[in-house]
Length: 345
Image (cartoon, rainbow, N blue to C red; front, side, top):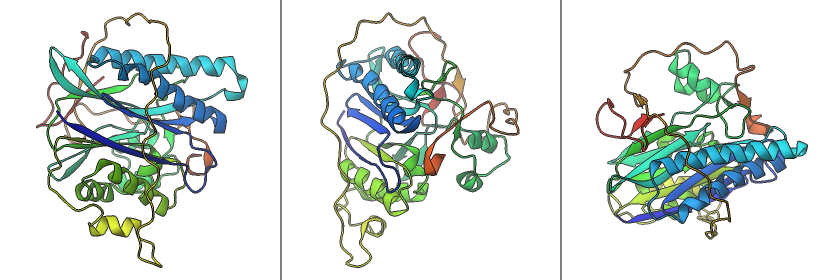
């Protein structure tokens, strides 16, 4: 199975430092968004990425390996905060896509903690795979807000799960087989806050090269305001669905063109060179864990969730800054409506 990828990241137009971090090296793709001030946020996101580097040295990781690394990242960030009072309160959101093997068959294993997202584009349709762990997402699922209201809500950056918090964090996982022609976008909220899903779909449809697609998306976020750090990783499986000339789509040109000269500016920097895995002591496998099937978002099925509390106090983490302020291994989720990823937790 041929897999191509590209990535881009930018500090944005407001922040002084980039607190996002990424890892793009088959079989592991991860985007982390740090919190806890300039030094703390940058440290937290890089601790997440460093934790996942060891999986890049394994040609065939299994699902439980991913869960082990997520727990390791959480513990590492927590330990760093306890050692140094200057970075107390640091944490990170994370989203990942890992090519794993189970019973001799390859699957994508996706996970998320917080509001960094994974999208899948296939057969002309854009689907958000992950579900934000945020106060406004709970309001949406309870029927108190629609998606348009959620984008403008003053508490939209209050997140309910974070790596490195005081309480243990339970990620959500999705396990599904690869399909030729599918494309994935992993991104921080600096992209989705500025760029509508419709534009994301237009770019993934128009730009066949994953590196250029990532650059176009980050550039679109900068042109829309760039009020946060912005990171995008685009992963393509097999051949593109249809050949298109690079940057020839009108949507892509509108995103990139200079209004004065109608010229295309340079794209933002691409993927950093891969680094070798860090030296780490061997860690024992965690105890067996249980995979529980969850109905994928948008099916309208499943038991209703209780409404969230009246406010975020005491139950969420607010981002700083001007924009934010089972059995082992996992089995594919059952009961999903139609084809596509199923959610397990």
